[in-house]
Image 1 (cartoon, rainbow, N blue to C red):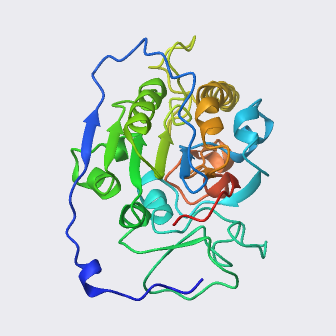
Image 2 (image 1 turned 180 degrees about the horizontal axis):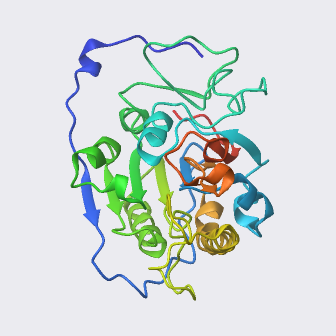
Length: 303
């Protein structure tokens, strides 16, 4: 696929913020949707499991997530949420440098290639997008762009949060890391209102410290993974993140089914250290922080 011609007029298109919603302080008891409207084959779902370790997803009982496709042990583009998602939104998704395969290795070929600088890959990119990032690119193709953030870097009333959220037509921030039912309700409502095709982004916070989901039987105030902490517990970290991931799998299963003929990309933005080399959590340059799961399946090319 050849790159569309560069247009200075298109490049100078002003940023028009979309509609942003922030969760109410107490949104407990929200029932997540049991089904979502079926999506077109050229729609796209991008799902990031914040801080989820590869080895946790590999061993967890997550049939919906594993139904997406083959599980790859990939390397993240950064060691914490903001730069990782900035890279992903620029088309640099987690990848496996040792594999000379399209999309699995974004240097070989990308899921999303932005028009602009950069050396072409070895194979054809899945879609070439105009715009300053993939969200803006899908909007320019006529897609409805719907996003949800789970962790604080997506807080839309901060300047850093606006970097990740301003280009969405509709964006929702859950207000805390365990807000998946409210996030899914927001996506459901906006998919019902959309005429499609849709680009949907969901950042899941339940897999982020303190590894908690609504109704969990442990104290959310007790964090077993504190940088430089003295009472950390690797086994408890693994137990909690696994339980949270299996909870996430049950709730997102209807959303995954709705995109059954569409493109789905699921990955973590980074992992966490659980005592390896004396390190805990993320934002450190360690292999366990960069080691992340990647799964995907492709529908029709966006158009």
